[in-house]
Length: 299
Image 1: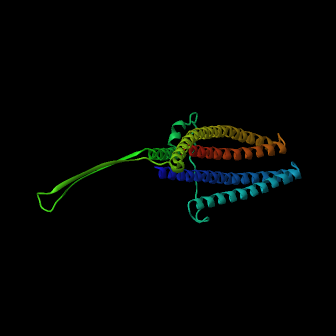
Image 2: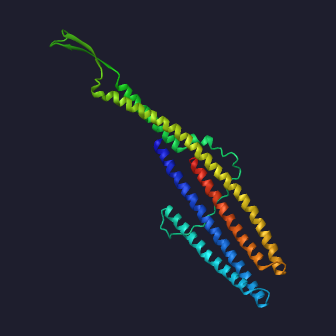
Image 3: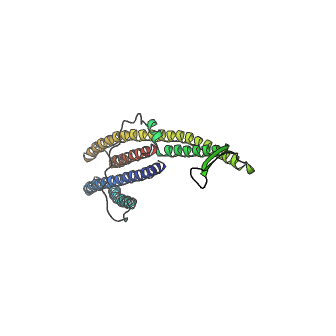
């Protein structure tokens, strides 16, 4: 049973590491796709600014700023590609393969959003750490019982019944019986000290079990709160992204018709990119929080 609990601890750690890496790969992959769309949008914006600049409707500084924004988007794209490659290499190493062995495409499942009650209370006593502590307490109890038993007196008894003689049936019989009582000698207090040490070990194991139970409960409750908070932020990011998209569409139309300035249009474009990035990060954070919650309950 103890070996099974240790095995579950190792499996849980591997699962957690895999989930975290899946989250990293998914986030990096999403950011790569997002950066590609951003580059295309920046290219379209640059072409638009070139037309306006040649027509005398826009300044040289606006043109250069738009060109710088495109180069910045391309630089970020390389950063996202590097992060994606690194996350995939980590996954290969975790799977026991050479780092450049294979580039896995990872898709993480959606996180359940009904975590008003995580239901972790019933999972604490099945947690591998709790079971390990419980088994250690049982071992300490057995050691104490053994030490306590050694201090008690022992009574031994023996009997003998036999025959002797050269000729049968004229033989002589003999019978022997006896009993002995052995009492442990407490030389240097060794046996008594052993019992006291076993008692302290049992008391310590019991205290560790109680503290661990409370610690596991607090960690699971904290992880549940983090998960609910992360899921709540996903909703905030979704709403903010939708608002940024509508705002960017409207201001772009206004800029094309000359109803707003380049600076306002650039500002809402940047806000849209930030909102898209925040959405990707919010989803990744929610899945990472979900992985941490599962680990906190021993899964």
